[in-house]
Length: 153
Image (tube, rainbow, N blue to C red; front, side):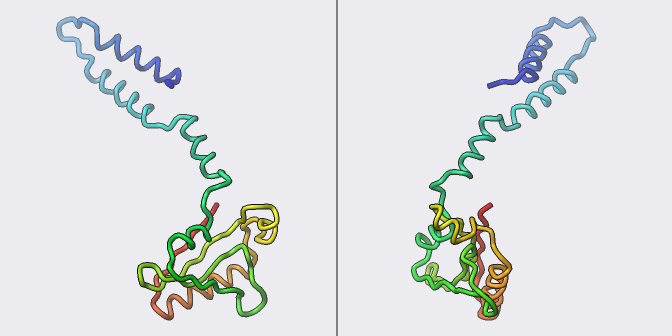
């Protein structure tokens, strides 16, 4: 759907393109400027395109970290706790086999229903979660494992 500015530019461009020019008159610079302006407007996403991306990001059935773990890893061992205080269920961290190679993974987990969302604090990590993430990062560095992070915003 074209907006008002695009319609006005198209009209002006078609009028200028169809003019019989007097000898010596040059409108090519103006035509090129209008065409560049029109191309820039066409490249901008429409409100419908923007909103469809927002709806997709908010969709209830979109995959969460554990969904990716289930589909990608052959063997998965979740690490719990920060070795100092407690475990944070909002942050999922662990080691798994991906194509025969051990990979460390850290990701947010929001939960699908209200009970799980409450348990996982709606995906908002506590300090314990960040310490757990640091623990997994240090483990990956120490053993030379690649590290993957999944951030659900």
